Image (cartoon, rainbow, N blue to C red):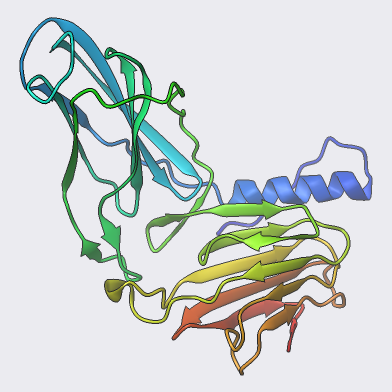
Length: 269
């Protein structure tokens, strides 16, 4: 990762400097844009009604939309007059499908369809190369399809989420990616234990989680019993050192979090 370049036009106050630092950290982990999936729509009974569908690939915090339109759909969708929406997969994405035009109503018609997944080494774990959904009159929820959102970063070629927590309590939602803690006073956060085993068997061995505190605050991260190396379960951030922040890189192995690297070392208990 390249060095951070923090350019501030804000007042020279601690709060403004913290905002600049958080913005710079988030910018530093912006993902390489993902090529949208290619969507096709095939009517079962060709007619003359226009339909537009949006397939939204979701990768962590990213949303990557792609659309397709036909003018040969049936006026009324049914099992005998359906539209089949197909698309190629993006590794590790899940998909929502929206009917944007046509049908009795519009909005999201399917959620969280799984596609290709990769293991920790970037190899294919499971691989339906294309996915499809049959719209025989599925109900839309009236919501609007999201636009591009490319916040996130790449790890082993996989896009990982960035979570910013400003409160003094909360749950770290992911076992991989970056978590930025911005509270000025000590916060208490929880982190689940990783699943033991390789990705090919549904485990999370090799997952990497970077925790960053932008303030000198004695945050605690509590896991289930014995989920931190050495039979520990509480990580307490340091408030001393040459930098007014703590960075911890955790790696999952065998259902336990290991400390891979640290700036301003934390204590374990």
